[in-house]
Length: 279
Image (cartoon, rainbow, N blue to C red):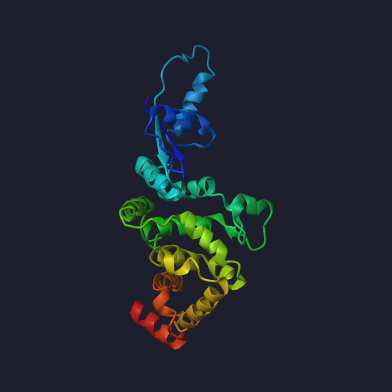
């Protein structure tokens, strides 16, 4: 049987070069590990272990991966599972978004799964699916990851290629940092409402990779005022002539990416900038 791959996230970057330290780390943190590859094999092994005559003396091989953050772990997961039909890139990202991020510690926003929303809706809560789409945009460095004109299998190949290409960019920003910034800025109600529009969140998750240092210390009220400027410029677009959702993703991304420069413009100047950017 091929090895089962178990992964851990070690934000403290523990020195695991010594075999003894590595073994102790795995044993101490086994409850926090993730099955990165081999879930079906593990379930089969568990079923077999309940049968009479099962030989539990045989060796089962395990690969261990220790990553410093969730993003690096997901890159590895996509590489391992690429081509496996039951586990599409979108599905992998949805699973890891739910499993690896602790949204309970956020102060200004709450996140619910579809199942949780079916039981009880928390007013103003973000949908986990929207967060995972923002994560996908962050990982691919692309705001356009859904296209009904392309068959699912081909789109999955494109997404994997985008994720792996984006991995090579020189950017140390983690999605966890992005979510924490969204949470901080959502102290302002207008900001929170703006982020709840999924196309805005998607654009933000890509654009912030270029402007995190400019925005990480911005006051929520100041950011709220800048978003109102964005909306003033965006309202100049004729909705009957364009795909409004696509434009919102692209322009919110551009606005956040070039935040420091575009903040100096007024509504008319920004509308003109958007017109030139999309022409």
